[in-house]
Amino acid sequence: MPFTEWFIPEGSTASNRLYGPAYFCYIIGFILLCLILAQRTFSRVKTITGLAKI
Image 1 (cartoon, rainbow, N blue to C red):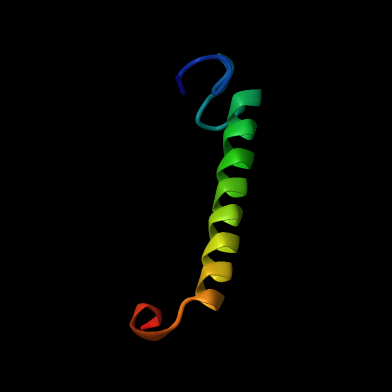
Image 2 (tube, rainbow, N blue to C red; image 1 turned 120 degrees about the vertical axis):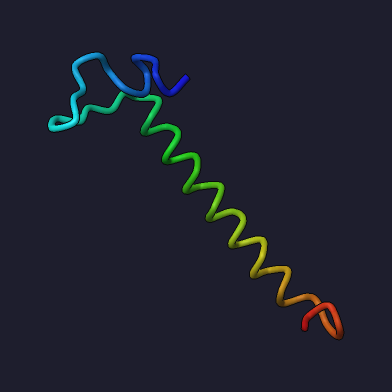
């Protein structure tokens, strides 16, 4: 899948990198998922107590 035109267009070279629309969607999705994971982790840390908190 990363070798399709959606990720890396045909005119992309080592010196002139081009990215397709799916590449940017993938990066944005990955960042959003990391932010959601961080938010849920921090909210969970506030609620746990005792041995689990260690």
